[in-house]
Image (cartoon, rainbow, N blue to C red; front, side, top):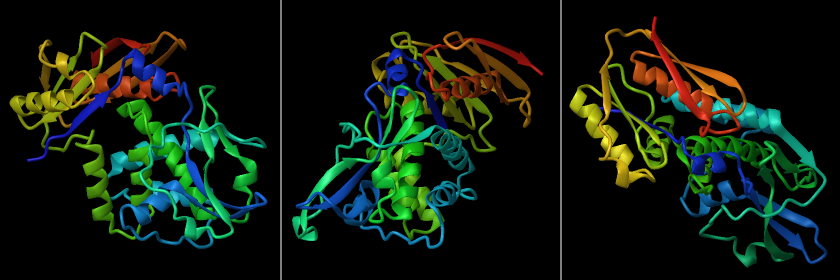
Length: 325
């Protein structure tokens, strides 16, 4: 029996992370000669996929970077439409907000990598970790133009970088990730030669339960923790299933101590259609976000999620109104 869970981060801490206060971005391993010229390069995500996780990376001939990123973002559409929609929505943000700069980007201490290339693989000089892109607090994706246009950087690596920025943005805003470890693993999986089913299985293992309920999940339960106002929602085929799953996901979050101090609200769907509409007002940007659902709880979740997807994050998404349609 499948039960699906979801979590929206709606606290000041997640607001800071969503705003990318210290910057977040993809890195590149660069082999440079003693004169400083680039000899060969490899995106950290794909290097780790091959050398840390034993994956084979598929070549994508005759496609430019943006097209490669779009192709990989939709590769699991049949297996996981929710994941596909999420990645694509954030990829649009990345492509819209990318800016190529003729400058060196400050290194961001969020990679936490476990392995580095062997010195013997760079006999001409030495390997350096280069900040290839940075999603800044000014809501721009800064990309080093000299690296992007270098003939040593493949379209495959550039496409993987764009997808990295999209996936990492999603994980920061909605899953409170403060490092790029999971984002890099997901990129490696999507660029590998694994079957679609195996890709989906591995990504689901990394992410935990899906945020999309199955058709048989008619119950939804939610709670908001009193300490940092984290909003949790759990789905199930029965009220007890939904409560148990809600407890599980809450206890695995950053506010676990407070999970049992609040009574959950539960509701059973009366229809297979989205008969509820909720709106959430973001007072910081004076904008209203909407969400539909089979229950008021699900509609509120979707509205808050849409609000938290904004560049300002979810801290100001507090004023909710719901009505049955």
